[in-house]
Length: 242
Image 1: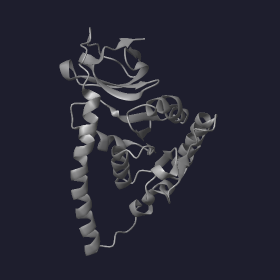
Image 2: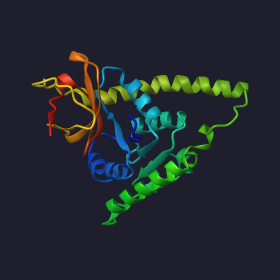
Image 3: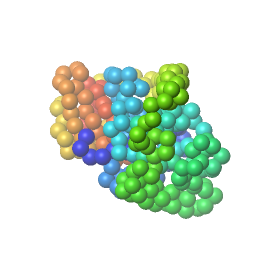
Image 4: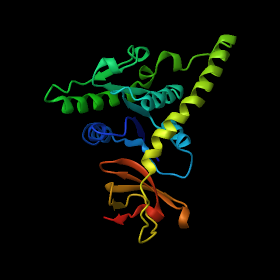
């Protein structure tokens, strides 16, 4: 994926799905980035490996903290551990954990009739600022410093590793809901070329980023106009050329 990507951390439920399609993704598109989410990763590999790699490959992340979703907090923690610059958004400061409040948070007021347009503009500006000065959007704890080799730091690293192993089971259970739909077999298993326009019955129109593999194991990566980037197994994708 030559084009830079932005990993979006958010709950997979309404009204956040609508916020993503109408506010967050358009702001990302405006800055010529791919929008990637955890439910975009339709691969055969372990979901946590996919999330980790997608955050690692991204240029920055956007995290919607409204609702105090534990999976959102966990993925944001992974992003911080990977030293990724993060843009935080929330509908009220109470949903922002105390430890994160020193960071810049875009607070939106839904009582304002123009809140959607304002938030979209603020996110777009924040993306530009973050790409220009990424270090400023990384908590001081996770910035690149010469690590003093102390016993206390080694102990803290061990504790964080144990915590990640426990919490990972929670996020795996949550994401299992995304994959309950029965796959629909494609009428054809055509090879798609990068740049080709395609249409999917659920995700709508989009542009092929890349195609890999062959036969039953082949898969295609598509940047959908509304849904963002998704990996699809070609055999079940039901993709048609636009």
